[in-house]
Image (cartoon, rainbow, N blue to C red):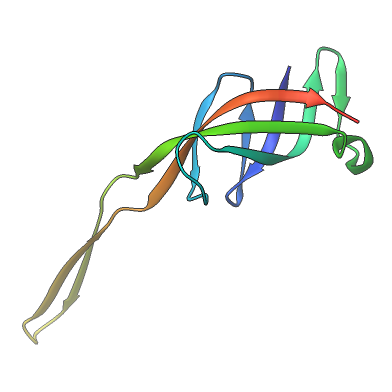
Length: 104
């Protein structure tokens, strides 16, 4: 059984015990969050209708905060002596999928 969930503006394929990195979520390590299902595949059954997806609950546990790779940014203007160097590391949250259940 696996599901396609919306996590931080992207769609991710998840199964139970998967660890994935999503955009920053509110909460501490050990907290439980619910993710929105877009598609659920259970053997031969494929669920994609919104009314049926509302019955499914995808839960995840926050593992911790992580940072993405460093991105180097360089500003340069020709013939003026202007040069500027900056860097950026995007904050992410690492989550572990704990359950895909059909409730209600």
